[in-house]
Structure formats: C-alpha cells, structure tokens
Image (tube, rainbow, N blue to C red):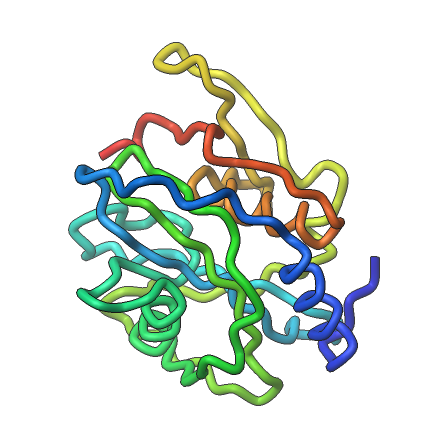
Length: 209
C-alpha cells in the first residue's frame, strides 16, 4: 500500500492508532522497569513515502550494544511513556517533538532483560532535523512502511530455550529480533486494522541479558 509522507497519511495512521484497543494495564511487576520507545514516522529518503526510524546502538553502550533498536530508554520518575519517548528521541536523535506529535500507544512488551516497554507512535514533520548522538547511536536508518507491510517481512522460528515463537524482521539481509521486531510487527498489524498481540513473541537468547 502506498503511504506518502503527507497529512492524509498522518490522519490515517492516527485513526488506526485511535481504533487500536490496547491490552488493559496489569498490576505493575516490581521486577520490571518501565521504559518507552518511539515508533517515529518520517519521510523516506528518496521514495517520498513514510518510514520508521530505526537505530543501530553504539558499540560503547553497556547494554545491548551494536543491536538494532527503536529510539528509547528507561522512564524517569514521574514521566509518562509518551514523555519518556519524546525525551529519548531528543537525546538520541536531536528530534524536538511535542505532545501534539504523538499519534498513539501500542501494547506494553515485557523483555527478558527486565523492562516493560511502551511503544509510542509519533510523527516527525517534514524537515525535522535528525542529529544522532554518537555516544548512543552508531547509525540511523529509515525503514519504509512498504517494507514492513511486505508479506515476507517477518518470519518465526523456535529455540531450545523457550516454547514461545521467536519473531524476526528481515532487513537488508539481516535479522532484527524482538523486542524491536515484535513492536514493529504490531505496528504493521495496527496499520492493517488488526489488534494482534505480541507480548508472547520471544527474543533470542543473546537479548535476554
């Protein structure tokens, strides 16, 4: 489906997010730390379409270095997930967005490494400057929505360590795994008008720490 980066696409995605019924928030799990990531939508480089911003984490980070990720991090005390996602977008990519740029929230995703991640869908208007912080981000990539909506974009496999399915997103000959792959997959499903749950989709063992 063609999704040009324009006001009509913004309205359509906002409507899809508003129609999405999030799972009710359960009682907080003391062992899980709250975190938020931004499903940040911007213009694709050349096609004129809409893309999701994806980062490759810097090699010097203490946790999950050199891994694919959506911009985000731990929520500070008193922050809402939306506030945390917007702050992290600014800290990692230099993007200054506000509450009016938030289109909606997806389901919380519990990670093996001890976080409960809330994905926040945001719209980065045309011309918004991206300036990656080299201490946190090795590189920034624009993943066209057409690519995540492709029939063969995602696959599932199993591992001996878990009875749950491992999700993989196929990107330029590489595999991107959960939690990032699971969150992008749910966003793809929201775009199609489906309330597909992803909390039980598994991460590879290297992401459990």
